[in-house]
Image (cartoon, rainbow over all chains, first blue to last red; front, side, top):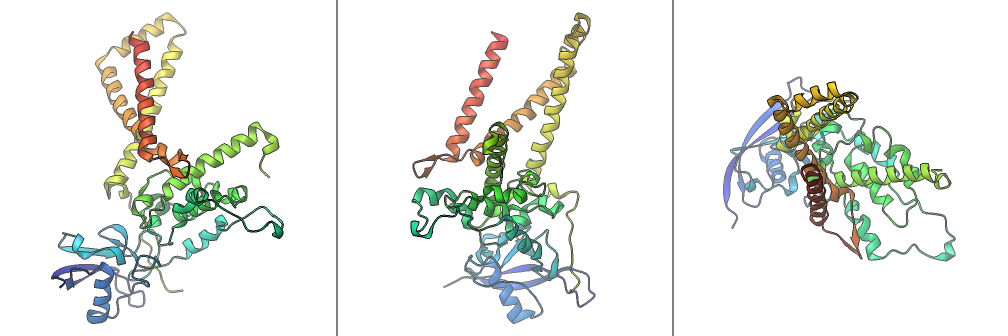
Length: 249
Length: 126
């Protein structure tokens, strides 16, 4: 039997259709031991205050919809257990660095627009169909697999002060996705991605704070991906300089 | 489009949590390293004639210089530590289909750093 306890959720409220100032509203709730922060928010919306707005979908750490700041840290609220917090109150805010549409709902347009700019799809060399499918060994899959686990939850953007200070930065998740395809043995699109990836707003904007990797719920390591991109594009540039016949097309 | 709320980062964002503060300290250590390169340039410049090199040599022996060297050494060591910690992120090595442990790569780089530093210290003081 789950044990019940009480806590206070301080929830960020922003209601643009009412002219009230944005601020925090406290809700004292009784929670079960197995409740996550998302359960508490759903309880508040169902039983206490139906005007509260937030995004969620799968409730199992797959869809990436329920990312919010919990006590100042970017978290998937469906994986964040209330019992793990020994503070008297738990503060829930929308993800930082994004415009807020309403309460805990952010505008993710900037992220959605940036994702396709790195050509996150396979760009293979043209081979005749009769040569069959592109085969990969488990070792070749292992090279890129960790970078392919991203669920687009945007926690890494909320943790990245570079993006917070300059939203033109392409950002951790999109760049990790570029490296995921660059590392794929079936892909030959590294130079095609260079214009975006090596632009000022790309890899060179990253100063390696490293918090994107720390907050990633899927272990993607965007900070590592960006450093690998820096090395591979720098080597490619040097190779083209020394051996012009291998130059960039 | 509904009115949206933007919340710009305050100037004190780097005080919000320890990793941000450590990042800022790491970046500021670069200033100390840059300042020390200026000192080395002064050393080269003063080597042009014996008189000015003696002036530089006398400066090195002052308590202020000793303190500066101690502080710059600490900051440079911190900076070096962060670089060694970064090496596994860039040097991703594979043995067959298994990735070489990041701690192993950082450890080897750390040992190499200590070895080269030891050789340099030996060359200077031997």
